Length: 267
Image (cartoon, rainbow, N blue to C red; front, side, top):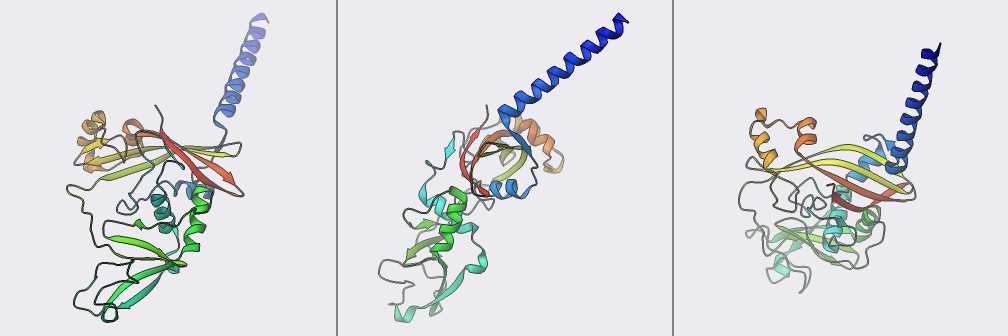
């Protein structure tokens, strides 16, 4: 009888410990969310650009904390531009013969000629309010000053009146050497008060060498050794978890959605 009573007490104590740990975890991390839910996937899409040629690539993955405040305004506008529905972008044809044989909107907005043999050069036009709408969704405020930005190595975008016009830049930026491969995978996501927190694993690989972040050149030697032994270089979640850098991304609630606040590696 005494033995049975001791077992009951032990079970109760263990249950209390488990419940207490659960409460502590809940208070510390928040309410767990489904990583595939729309609110998580939409917020996650704000973390830089998967097309590494555009807007600087995955700019929120750095060795130091990147915030809404220290990310350049040009980069933020570029990221917002890239989120706009492409159906909202229209083509604009310019007759160079009427513009001193130069591809330009006016004397200040000059683009490189996309086809020297043709009389017509082509630009794209997008209403800047569309860009501002995406900017507000992503960063929680309106654009304070509409600035020109470099969309990719060959394309520059200028603002004129109520629209952004994009075309070939007069100076091009070329990448020398192998292009990086980047891998990301969400670990988990939590809702805590008015914040959404997403944890993910990140890895950048160039010529079979691993790096701890996208924006910097700190090597991950342990990963490089393991990556060279990876069959057919097929990335797996298990490999990312073991060798990648864990990042914490924080978002703030605004109505029914969340805007990005900061990203940093977790030591």
